[in-house]
Image (cartoon, rainbow, N blue to C red; front, side, top):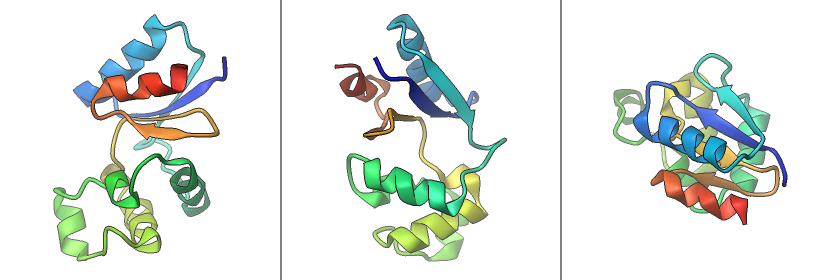
Length: 115
C-alpha cells in the first residue's frame, strides 16, 4: 500500500477523525500540519491536479479572509493565491496518495484511497 500524506489541522475534529481512520487501517501516513508548514503555490497546483472534485471544494469559503478577498472560487489561480496568503483557508483534512487526493468531509471519504 502507498503511503498517504494527510494535510492536517489537529484542532479540527474531522481532521483528527481522518488521522485515526488511517492509523486504524494501518496505513503509513505522513502528517503535514499545513498551518505550521504552509503549502507553496506549486504544491497546491499539483494537489489540485490530483483532487477529486471541484477546485472550489479546496477552499474554506466561510472564513472571513476568503470573503474579504472576493476571489472566484472556481479559478484555480485565485484559490491558490488565497491559500498561499492565508493557509487556514485550505479545506481539511485532505488525504493524498500521490495519485489522487480526497477531501475528508466526511472523514470516511478517504477510505477510497485505501482500496
